[in-house]
Image (cartoon, rainbow over all chains, first blue to last red; front, side, top):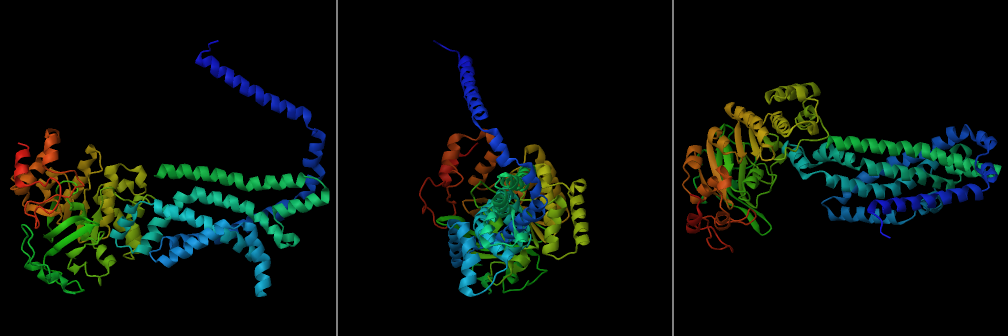
Length: 261
Length: 325
């Protein structure tokens, strides 16, 4: 039986909607909604999490993330410049660093810094410093490659214009190239910030005092106390409170950069 | 040190009196600020890998002089210009600008460059800065002028190129002609002693060329020393004190504009001008036989080593045969 092109498209679409409806109906009738509501949406448990989940956990997550991001950004910029250096050993150093820290799990870095270094060197590192170093060391490896790509994406004519105005190589880099490079890499850097926000949950390894809890550790503790998944859900939503605006920010910045180019 | 004298005897077609320029070459300082020479190029050669783009250039630009460099693409004219402020490092030869031999490795090139304005074909404005920011950043970072002084100079230069109302506009908000005028103003904000223009109108839509040429013309009228690589023959004819025709990495012919553009002596100059002034009349075999594709280096009829390069070298007779008109 011959179908016109339009008929065929309509038939395919109808089948797709039918499959979707079947899945949804199965979910609605097969799931035990009472059980799910008890596990995820326990109002009493939910209320008990506030305000600490905000004032302590969310705030700490943000602090840990920003510490790691700030350190990682500075180190990443340095690594990117080393990577572009005309002195080969500097390049090798940067490449080795980047390959190493991109290759090992962040978890391992946390363990090394949180337990290995204090044991091996008999020093006590402040908790916040540990987080900053662990997140930053790993984040820097990723950010270095991003920033390097951004620097190389700035047209050569920009450096030439700057140099022909009498700027030195480093002055041209600082005043002309790097500001433009950061504009170019703002979206990928913000993605890195989102990744670091989630990686900050690895702090739970370090044995924290109550006022140092961040979202994941907080949620896990509350889960143990209440035998309810509700705190986990709330913690998850709190992460979204951080990451969704960031994603929105990236899109706006991208739009602005697109206009300015 | 003192390398300026080494190559002084080399050939160079139509080199203008170098008696005044002899003192410019020696050593580090800015010798002889008042000797009337703005640019002195001697024995300049530049190779990119195996490709020799400049094959022995000698010429001189006097203070206050406007010199236009014309020639087919690939003839090395942009490379020559870029050697004058050392954006390209010459392979050999000396370049003396404003009394400083910049090819001397001891020279702090950044100090010399701030006295040389450069305008690029693609504008190269800083897209992250407003027009005012483009004009002030080097004043502040290089000349260490304070904020108010830099802004005052910047506004004055913007007014000079007719863009007073655009100081807060970003490059992307400006037309090509406006961007190039900002670029000229940016160079002028450094109070340069001379200005280099690298095909300043080649990236512009035809209706925007005039506004840029008008600014350049007014600069010339004010006595600015200018070295201009251009395809604008009417500009060269009307504004230049001297026109230099380059082809195949050498200066083929130079002289007063009415002579070089109006009554060229060399066949290659004539064939080039014919193609530039009336592109529609160019015959396809004229392109093949006469002047090769832009990236193929050519022989000059009076080149030092005739016949050393493969390919159809445009000798006098082949050229004559294909000469348009």
